[in-house]
Image (cartoon, rainbow, N blue to C red; front, side, top):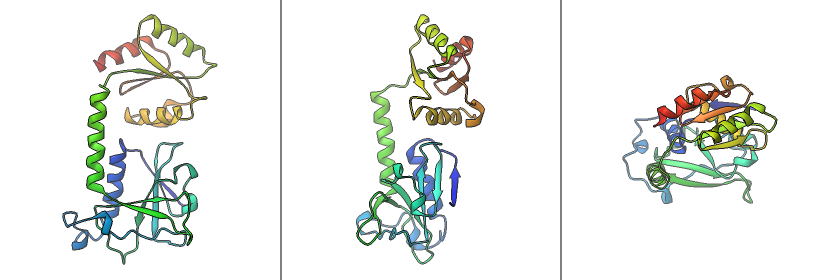
Length: 230
């Protein structure tokens, strides 16, 4: 299996932007690749996505690691992410508009063995994503919640939960063994805090306070992190 992994970037729009930049960096002087030239998804020709097409790369977010992953074969794309996979056409004979995003549904092949592909306008997609972020922030004002990643057998976790309640500190508890998304989310939080996923180790509890990640139960460290978020 030929897999390349790229560190996770914040936000889906940044992920797609990275895809577009890399896909459109070649042949930059070709007029057909000028991002300011007229573009319409309805009239744009998408690449034929078929297992036999060796000129394609497939990009998706690995749900286990939270990393952007790139593969060269359809059968290397995990089943759980096949509904929407970004496609890059490496065929030098093709000249796709740099505003074109190709999103393939690799879950069910068509009669000829190929897969359905949608063409999106990168500029419009990014604008919609940015607007969604603005609207979300209006409806859900930012705050500094405490998220405790724990396990049922963890005595320190129970002690920490008791302390948080006694000090009237709102918190959300996520069990890394029962919640399949807990560990990937914790790794992502660690990376956003400038830490490596390995540095948080496999121990609990781990606390995420705003943009801060705290290993182990340290009341003073939690209080300090909360003060910085105000």
